[in-house]
Image (cartoon, rainbow, N blue to C red; front, side):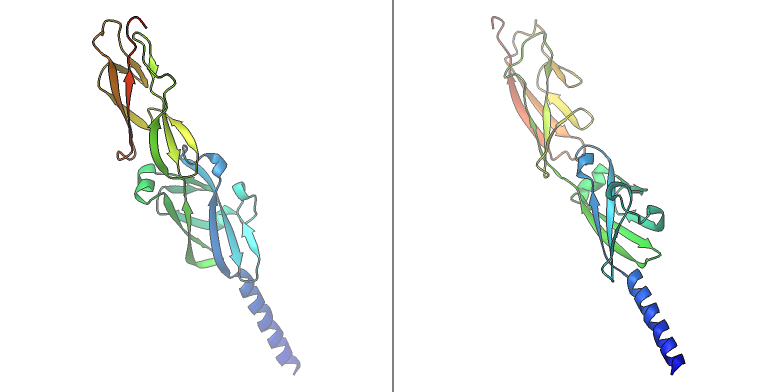
Amino acid sequence: MKSFLTILSTLLTLLATGQQKEVKSIKAVYDSSSLPELYNKIPIGLYIAFANGEIRTTPGFLRGNYNWNRIKVVPNSGTFQNGYLLLDRKSLISRDYTIQLTITSADIPQSMTADIVLPKLDSIRFHHYADSLKRGFHYYLNVEGIYSSGRIFPLDTSAVSFEVSNGKLLGQDLLINNNETEIQAVNATATYKNDERLKALTTIPVKKLNE
């Protein structure tokens, strides 16, 4: 009888230990304050839920103690390095801004997956600082990106390219010389480099010489 109780106790202990280590689900999150709309190195974290109700988190962004060196994370877009996703923008666009992480560890012998959905660039627009252009002065072509997160950020020539019908482009500045008196307006187009379907068009009047 005593040996039976010992065996039963051992089995219950093993069962409890196995249940404690069994991972039921994983949730992946990203740090929105890292501005994933603009930057390509994004801190992420994992919530790891065990069968016994325990939830553990990863260090860094979530300040947990389930160390990254215990986990193998393979994203289907970009790369992963010690708690950071390094984004591949063009690949991200083709996947509708969703990254699937395949995760394994000693506690997760059978791989599990978790998705991260990042803010999407919905559209771009011109937002002019002045309503007309003066000959002989640089006119800044201000372009903004409107994101699914509700945020709006200015975009520079690393993200957009420009075409103009008249004048000269100097980086993101447009210049009409004083002697180009026949030009009354300039049509400008901005195109998002990573997705050429996203464009913005504008017409900028040129001030008359006596204005």
